[in-house]
Image 1 (cartoon, helix red, strand yellow):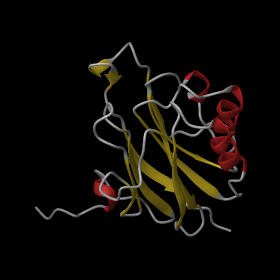
Image 2 (cartoon, helix red, strand yellow):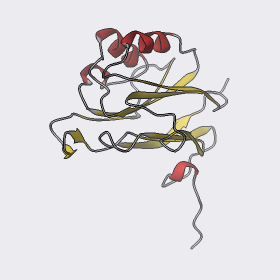
Image 3 (cartoon, one colour):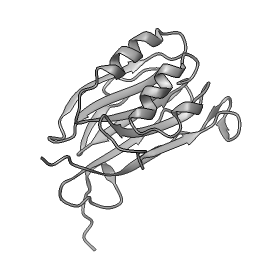
Image 4 (cartoon, helix red, strand yellow):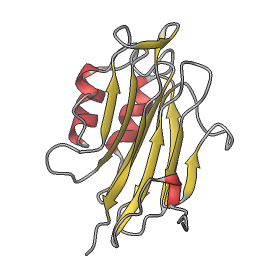
Length: 176
């Protein structure tokens, strides 16, 4: 049988006018998160562009081109930096998010609301050392279907942290 290599190692290919993505959260405080979009790794420990807290990549929803990627320390960092970043996301932008170690300590109501506006269901309950992966959009209506969440104490696989989460799928391209 002939094995077709899919972008980002997905189990199936995406239809035309859809982008392929895969997001993995970090594992405890040991293995950093990674993000793949259209076959390109945009954030990973190997690329050395991930960090503790929330790792966020922005992708143009029409072209599929990566715009920027940043991580925000949610344990001892400045939450205002994240607020500013989220408020400045332009229209027509996909937002990919992966937690690492602790996404929740510096989380506040304003940040929760901004993530909810991007389509998140779980941002409002995100807390200390939870695992969270999410793909949303600046101009989404309603909730994104692309989100996974694990609460910290309930499901801990590692000592003190829940297991890592994988999120993959096909997100529709914004066609003018």
